Image (cartoon, rainbow, N blue to C red; front, side, top):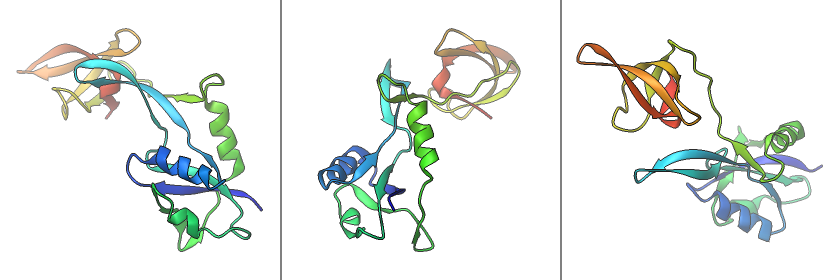
Length: 166
């Protein structure tokens, strides 16, 4: 019986592993998402795997050997629990496919709704590592954060992607 399993790939080789598995006529699913990220001082839309270093593979382990999968370029191994392959329920894959944009097949970047007064951590940029207080959204991709600078609360506007709930 065909079931979905998880393949662990080499770093940033999800597409290579998927292409090589498909070349061997395996059915694969590699969900992607789009987010806005700062690259060399400019904001760009970036498309990345939804689950970095992982992709899904549909096989029947009772009928097919998994040896070629492990030796496929880009693949590290199949994910197991105690030397036992564990299938991913079809409902999980179906839900992932339904959540993707019907036109592009991409998922939207996961976002957390922040509330005024909520403690946040800054994850990138010149204030990386500092904690502040969420003030409000400043447009679609930016937020206003209150940081304590020299003993005084200072309002700083930054990219939404560089802030996470603390």
